[in-house]
Length: 92
Image 1 (cartoon, helix red, strand yellow):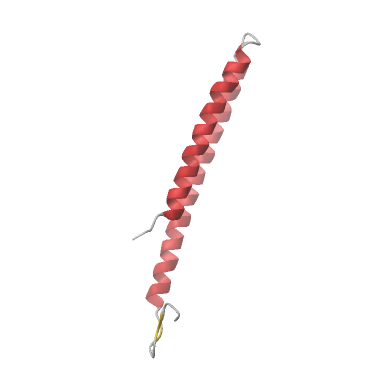
Image 2 (spheres, rainbow, N blue to C red):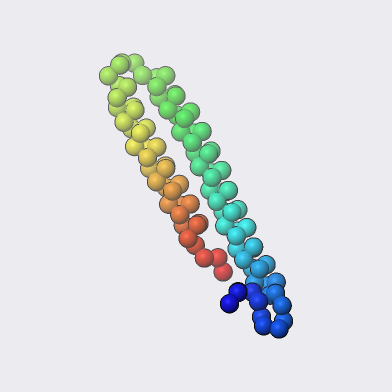
């Protein structure tokens, strides 16, 4: 049996409209999350470049790279978690 069809009455447009609104809301949330992540990425790259430029000793390179690698991994984890929540979340 097809959803959205009522025997004898035709297609139920309210169900289709509701589904489209739900999908649009999820897409908007994903776009906003992606934009926030892009801004955070740009800020991250700027801070990384500043730190690399301020290094006075070759021995500091490893610690700066380790610090920024762990920060980058945390940023990616948060982004992935936010996108997963938006994908799975049921909107009213």
